[in-house]
Image 1 (cartoon, one colour):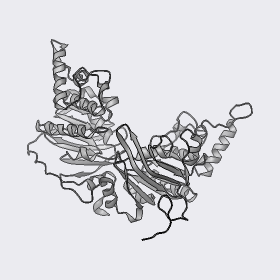
Image 2 (image 1 turned 120 degrees about the vertical axis):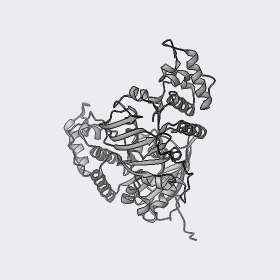
Image 3 (image 1 turned 45 degrees about the vertical axis):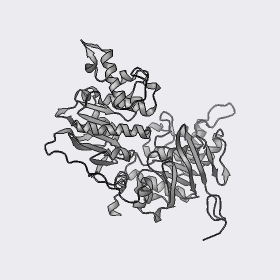
Image 4 (image 1 turned 90 degrees about the horizontal axis):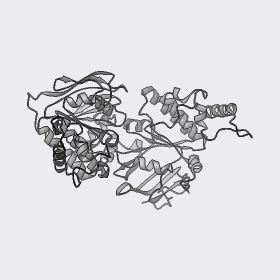
Amino acid sequence: MSTAPQTLDGGPVGERRPVVEAVRVTRRFGSTVALCEASIVVRPGETHALVGRNGAGKSTLVGILTGLQAPDDGAVAFDGSPAPPLGDRDAWRRRVACVYQKSTIIPTLTVAENLFLNRHARGRDGLIRWSRLRREAERTLAAWSVEVDVRQPASALSVEQRQFVEIARALSFGARFIILDEPTAQLDGAGINRLFTRIRDLRAQGVTFLFISHHLQEIYDICDQVTVFRDARHILTAPVAELSRPALVAAMTGEDVAMPRAEHRPLPADAPVLLSVRDLVTSSGAELTMEARAGEVVGLAGSGGSGKVEAAEAIVGLARPAGGTVTVDGRALRPGSVPDALAAGVGLVPQDRHREGLVPSLSIAENVTMTVPDRISRYGLISPDRRDALARRTIADLAVKATGPHVPVADLSGGNQQKVVMGRALAGDPKLLVLIAPTAGVDVRSKQTLLGVVADVRRRGAAVLVVSDELDDLRICDRVLVMFQGRVVGELAPGWSDNDLVAAMEGVDLHHV
C-alpha cells in the first residue's frame, strides 16, 4: 500500500490543487437531511459529472458550491483556499457560476445588457455609455467564440444561444469553474453536439465544468470523471472510462444485481379498455399512444425533459394538446378541459399539490369534496353533514393526521396534504386514476399509504396511470412505458429490474453495451 503524502482530497502531494473541493458536507432542512457527509473533488481542466436519482442531494450541493447556502458541517474550498463568506457575492462570481436548466437571462433586455447587468459602463456623469457597453459585450463574446448580435433582445435567442451567453457572462466575472445543470434538457441532437464542442473548446482554454445530467450517455460522451450521490451521500467517484454503464446505474440505484418482482395476476381477457390515448402530441412536441384496461396499473416513466408530465397533463385536461385524442371508457374527452375529464370519471393527483392540488385556506372537508358537489348535496344545496361524513372517511382511510374535517389544509404536514389531494381524487370513485409524482416530498409512511391506495382502486376495476421517475412509485405497476426526449422508447413487462428501468429512463440500453 502506498504511503505517499496526500492532500486534503486524498491525492498525492504535488498534484495541482482542485478547482473546488467539498469535504464531508452536511446540510439539513428541518428534519430532512439533504446531504450527509458528502464530498466531491473537481480538478482543473476536467469535465466532471455529478449524477444521482431525485433526492440524492445534487441540487443542495450546487447551492452550497455557488454560495447560495452554507453547509451545516464540512468545508468547501476553491483552489485550496476556503470559500468566501456568503455575503460576498462578487467573490463567489469570480470563482464559480451555474448555468441552470431554467435560464436566468432577462428576455426584455438586450444581450449586451444581460452580459453586464448591474455593472454597466458609465461616464463621470454617472450615465450609461451604451456604445462602450456594446463594444465590451462584443469583445466578451468574441473572446469565447459566441456569435450573437449584442444589440438584439435576449428574447430572440434560442435556448442554445442563451446558454452560451450565460457561460460568457460567467467567464467575464473571472470564473473558470462552470456548473451546467441539465444543459441538454431543451436541446435537440444538433444543439447538444454544438454544446459539447463548445465545452471541449472552453476546456482547452482552462475552463473546468461540473456537468449534471439525467442522460447517462452524455456522461460517457463528454465527461472525464463521474461522482454518484445516492440518498444524500457520496457513493463513488471514478474515471468515466473505467466505469461500465451497468455499474454506474447500480451505483445510482443501490442494486448490484437485478431484484425479482412479484408476478402480477394476469388481467381477464375481456377486461375493457378504460383509457385510450391515440397520437397525442403535447404543446412541447412530446408524443404518446397507449392504453390501460380495467384493473390495470400502467406506469409512465422518464427523467426530466422526457415529456411524461406534459403528456399526463394533456390526458387529464390540465394542458391543451396540439393533437390526438383521449378516450375514457368510450367517451372522448374535450381537449384542455378538466371539468370534462372529471365528468368522464377521471381522478387526478397533480404534480404540484400547492399550485394545482389544494386550496390551503380551506378545510380538509372543503378540499376533499370540491369536485363532487352532487355527492354532498341535498335539494340542490350542499349538506355540511354529508360533506363532513365523506371527509371523515377520507381521514380514516388515508390515515390523515388531523383532529377533524374542519382543520385547514394549511395546518397539515406535506404528507398529510398529499393524502387530502389523493382523497379528493378518489372522492368520485374514478374510472381512471392519474397519479403524477404522487409521493414527491412526503415521508416514508405517507408514501406507503398513498401507494397502498392503488391496490384498492384496481380491485374496484378502475385503471391507474402512475406518472413518475421514482422507483417506489413505479414498482406498483403491472407494466411501465418509458419516455425519453418526448418519445416512448420502451415498455417494461412485469419482472423489470430497477437497473433496467433507470437505464431506459437515462437513454441507455444495458443489453447493448
